[in-house]
Each structure stands twice: as structure tokens, then as C-alpha cells.
Image (cartoon, rainbow, N blue to C red):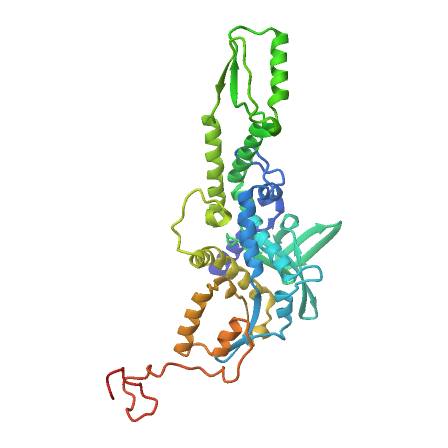
Length: 415
């Protein structure tokens, strides 16, 4: 064996040893604790309103976008309605789920676990169903022949599939065996947020946080202390007794307590936790209702939505699109010009005035036809609406003046 080939073989063996097996507990444990001592699981982090808001926003937006299958023929591209993947990806990937259900599950798996899996069910060479698999169940390993094997157990049944029978969408990280888990890398932030929430709940539970202090001139006997505590609790505990007058006698004074520095710091920590969580998911805090600090990002909903689409959604959508094309399309599909894309047109729709201005400009330069505009507005086509049109003033400089289609002279100037 020549030295170059021997070196390549040794390098390949080294990589295979490093990337042999990836068990679920290898990157995530159901008993994983963060720096604050709180157990971090997919269920516990979703109990945090900031995590729920971020995941719900990203997954809900992604799932609401239709997945389209296109076919390109020459310089024309059209929706491939007859392709078997169209109904599967656009309407219902399996017997139990709608497309929105399926893509929300896939997107949530990517956001929390860094991986999304679905078993590919085929009839011959035709894909007939995509059955999602929870990432917590999945073990992934590379076989000696270089292929990847997926195994999991669900409802007492053991499944083992090769990569050709699995749809595996990897999250951030690019590792062939799987992406990086947000649960793992964000565990300290999630643990701290859970600990702060727990501390807040303990402080304010049952309204037992003291609002003031009673000071007596003399020491109380055990009977007097018990009577004072019992009667005050019965009289003032609960919302029904809020605001009732407090009668003091025998030299007793009342001192009002305001929020303590510790409590104020806890409230600040809760706000900071929201911002930290938003950083992990790439979501601007104001988009999940955290408006403590004003934003200068864009003016109006359209610009804010455009920024979210550019910097947060775009790479997620591209990651899913490329995985679908790589793993589901056949060589014949690629030769026929088949491609898969999310249709983001609905996400970028402006208000009525903005759309009208855009359509007017696009039809004026001949970039869109009237029927293309009507289709975007869910209106039926009209006769003659497929002919591109443009303003007559927009003619070449060297146009023949005798041409009947020449530009009309400006008002007050005769040609």
C-alpha cells in the first residue's frame, strides 16, 4: 500500500472511532442539572414562558409556511402537483398528522434537541409516509462500512434503520451524527431561570410575604404572641380582607416594608433570563412580549417580520429544504428539475397599501402580469391578463421616431 493511501486509511479509521456511536445520553441526560442545581429536561424548560414563547414562535411560523415541490423546465418553473412528494409534504406526511402538526414537531425537535428524525415509509421507490421519531429515543452510530445506522425503541418495539430509510435533519453544528442540543448547551441558563422562578414562587406563595412589622414595647408572653399571630393571620390573610384597618394598642407600632433589595435583584434576574434565553433561540425579546427595553429594529411590523425571517428563519428553512432534497429526491427527480422549497411569500406580505404599490411597480415594468398579481391575491384570472405590459414612455433611447410605439412627448412640448 502506498504511503498516501495508508495515511488516508488511517485518518478515516480515526474519524470512525471518534464518530462511532451517539447515544441519547451522550449529549443529553434526563437527570441533567445546570449550574443552579435545577434538573433540565424538555418538559421543564418549556414551562419557562420565554422558552415556550421562542419555540412556539419559531415552530408555529415554520409550520404555517407551505412546503412546495417545484419542477423547472427550461426557463419556467411550476408547482409539481402530480409529484408524489407534493401532497406528502404540503398536506399530510402520515395518516395521523397534518402538515402543520408534522412540521411543528420537526421544528421543535430541532430547536430543543438539535436533531429531527422521521422514518421514511416506501412502496417500492415511492415515499408514502414520514413518521416522526422523538429525538430522546434515538441512538445513532456509524457502521464499519461508513454508513449511518439509527435505532430506537418505542412502545416495546425495537426499530433499526439504515440512513436510506430515515429523514435526519441536523441542527446547528454540522456533525454527520447529529447537531448540537440547545438543552445541553443552554442548561446553565435554563437552570438559572428555573431556580429564579422557583424562588419567586416560594417568596410569594399563599401571600405570606410580610408587608410590615409590628413592634411591641415589652416582651410578649407566649399566650400574647400566639394570640397576636393567630388573630392577625385570620383577619388579614387573603384578598377578601385586604385594606381592612389595623387597630394597635398598648404601645404597638407598625412599620411598612417595601420590596427588599434581594427581591428587586430577583426581578432583574428574571428579566435578564428572558434575554439570555432569547439569545439561544435567536428571537428578539419584543417578539415574545418582553418589552422592558424599547427596540430600534425597523419601523413597523413588516420590517420586524423581515428581520426575523432573514436572521432567524432563513437558515432553519434552508436546512430543512436541503435535507429533504438530499434524502428524499431520487436521481431521476434531480434530472427532471425537481426542487423543494418553503413558500415564504405569505410571511412577507405587506399591508394593502404596500402590496398595491408593489404590484403597480412590478406590472409597470413588465415583471409581473395582471393574472400573477390576481393569483397572489387569491383572485381568479381574467382574459388577456397573462400578457406582460409596460409603460409606453419606457422605450430605448435609439428608438425609431417613426415607430408608432414611441414615447409621447411631455405636456407642453410637441414632438
